Amino acid sequence: MSATQGNYREYETIFIMRPDSSDQHTDSVHGRIKDVISRLEGQVVKLDSWGKRKLAYAIRDRTAQKNLHKGIYFYLRYMGGSDLVPELERNLRMLEPVIRYMTIKLDADADPAKYAEGFSDEKAEAVAQA
Image 1 (cartoon, one colour):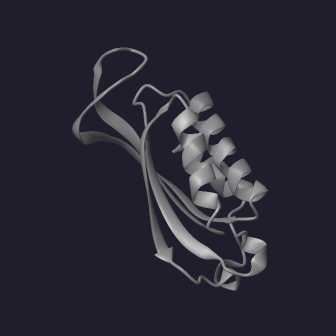
Image 2: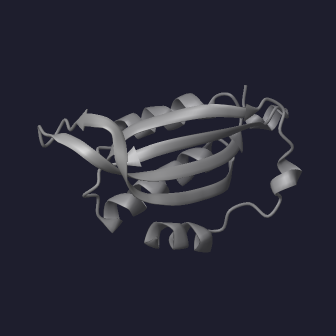
């Protein structure tokens, strides 16, 4: 079911990027996320950078063949249909800088008018620079 059929859901996804990710990598990940959400008629509510933090446990890096102990955390809150989450997670899996992600459904019947102003590109650029 797509969001056009009237059943918007509200989700949050926290994803962790490699600690050595450049601004270009961060921008490309954010661009890909916004593209997927807009293509599936969703709406970004909030995108926050939580900065570089210590991981709860070491994660084996596939490309560098070493353990990572830190990561750059991002918080994404968005609305869309039920088909949005599998597509977003599929894209996150394919992005090399992303090492982990988790999605939680916050509301099964969200009101898109509640977030009418949406999320502007200026806000996204400010988050990417943080």
